[in-house]
Amino acid sequence: MRLINCRTFEFEEFVQDVPAYAVLSHTWGKDEVTFSDMSDRDSASRKDGFDKIEATCRVALEHDLRYAWVDTCCIDKSSSAELSEAINSMFAWYKESAICFVFLSDFTSFPNEMLVEIVASFDARESLDKQEENFFKDPPPLTGKEINLRDKARKGLGSCRWFSRGWTLQELIAPSRINFYDRDWNCFGSKPQLASVLAWITGVDTGVLKGNKPLDEVLVGRRMSWASARTTTRSEDIAYCLLGIFDINMPLLYGEGKKAFTRLQEEIIRSSHDLSIFAWKSDGNDMRRFRGLMATSPAEFRGCQKLVKPSFEWNNGGEYGLTSRGLRTDGLVRIGRGEAAAVGSYFLSLDCVEERQSKLILVISLRQYGPGLFARRMPWVRTTVVDLNVYSATRLSQPQYVCCKDTPLLENVVMASRVNAIQVRFSSDHFDIESATAFPQADWDLRNSILLSFQRPYFWGMWKIKARDRDDGISIVCVRSTGWLLYGIFALDKLPAALTRDDLLPSHVEDILQRLPNRTSTECSDFLHTIKDVHLDLGDTGVDIPATLLQVNSTKKMHLKKSRSRIKRVQTLFKKIDLG
Image (tube, rainbow, N blue to C red; front, side, top):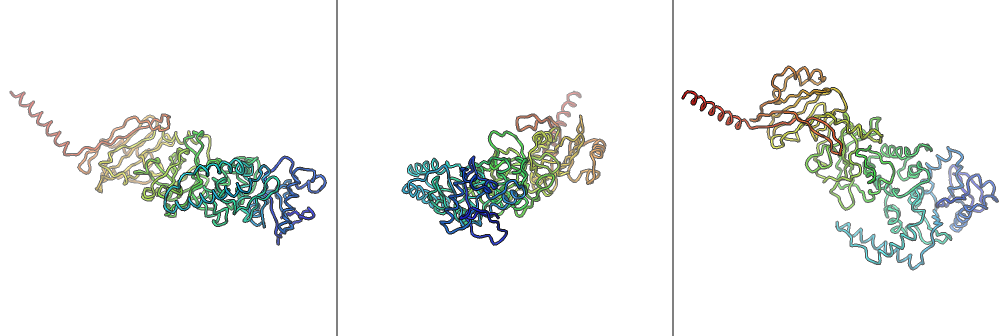
């Protein structure tokens, strides 16, 4: 680590046994002193940025510190290796400093009386919020005086450029001891003293700022929200400036652009089991119907500021991991039924809730678009499901893969997967929807009983369901190719043995069905079940998606006997008339 000797302004390097040092946090200007500039002291001193270095050293000596670290000049940015090491180490360097001086070049301190009043108002409101939260009540609205003081804090301190820059977020969080200085280097408060005001401006938890709450106890989505309104000069830096906040190390690749933020998310997924990283919501102007699981920037986490863990673990240890096909999930993707069905065919519980809505689990809606493949559906919506419905929802038994990265063709691929699909429709009065099974399972949208086409020219599927309160039921078998569709309905105990093999190909199913003379009706549970096909539009997003509906009609056999009896009586009557 390279430090400035505060008395001589010379650099001294330390590999171990680093002495106590002060660190400067600031926003860069146009005339900063660089590492190479420091080799010529006279030239460096003529730059505007040297005043900050000089003031930092002076204040450090006032705190009995012989050394200081300033990012503008203590890193040789001409060395990519040194720059990479510095950025990956920066959070630790700030954390291990004896004190951090935050210099706000665009702020003039409030009068002492006003600052005291502002801090007291924020502290009192924070205490009131915690008190009401313990009783599950909403806090009373802000008073006129509180609104006025908040307006002054926002226009004064809150408008400082330091609060809008990406790099300064870790510089606020990492050091345990921070003093804040205005443009004239007047100290107007410390981090503990200003914690409630800083929390209101930045969104960072007061407990984190005061050192009472470990950073790793805050959900990933909530930590991301702290950077949602911050910017960096280079697009890659919005990811690199967050490395320390998520305890991540990764190589720097300037030139990769927004891919850096994707890489950051991938590293977070690999190193933690925190599904709140998928709790982002797309901007209202982004009208893509389907997205991958990765957010495009921290800005999409703007609404995650109040996320917390639920009081009970609803995912029961479900596993996930990154693969070349997407996020592989085991026991996490669930079939939406009942109230949970409102979120779509499938959903992924994110195991987090809003602070004051402890029973509403945040989930994301999924749409299947390939064998075992899913994409995020309606990414602009934040969806919740009552915790008991999450717990009782059916899990998919096989591993599923959820698309992670956005591609230009994703939306078309997802929608095309339903072109020429086959949906089975039946009466829930006669059948138990919870008992529905399908084969091949990965080819079915089981929640909606849809055999997906996945743009295949030739495919088949089998769908089974049990009658309500009985062990018997029906099975529907279908095979489709370009221009035609074959299908049949069978009682479960009358399913042809040839259709029970697990190695069937579409050609086998076609051959079997063609040999069966009567395959559009079957009897079971005192019902006659018939099936017919009609045209169907599966487009639910304003785009037509042609498909086929197989409609199952169920009629009680007693009614059929009465109908047949009436027909016979009519026939007998006509015979008598002819004899007369």
